[in-house]
Image (cartoon, rainbow, N blue to C red; front, side, top):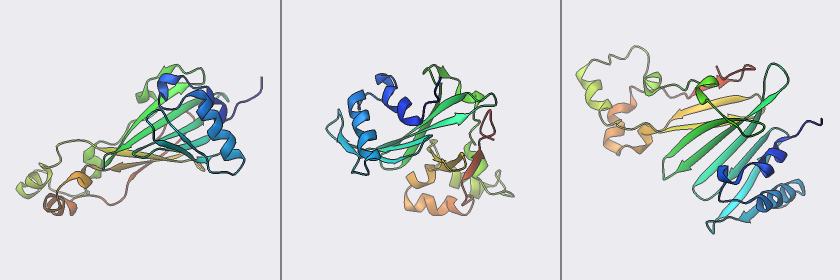
Length: 193
């Protein structure tokens, strides 16, 4: 059986996983991209969907306010799973990650990734029980996390975006307590670590 690349899975994925872009439009995008042409088509929401990047194992699809990244991840026995990251920006970006078999059976995300919680993004040594910190962090009342794949080395980047949602005054109060770097995960044959 011939191994399939990511374009096969992108064009044959069930419609309920990408309802704004039916199969023939996805095929058009792949053909346009392979022909080094502007890989943009009209989607079901009367917006534009653009295939920005495609390799044998990775696709990056962008619309006006959202994006989808899709990657084939190798497992220890030469089989593969599919990871999909959907990101919506309104205006602060928030992502959801899903994992599937190559037959599109949904897998438990926790089996492949344990994302950092907001406390990971607090600088080491911060007195989290201090009144000043408690006051500053009280504005962080939701959890907005953005994820991106680095397909060359199968790295996953997690960015804590809740601070970007804050008012300038609230952000100034919390900024000094936050790490500047994102959380980086590497794929190790069975999960992101």
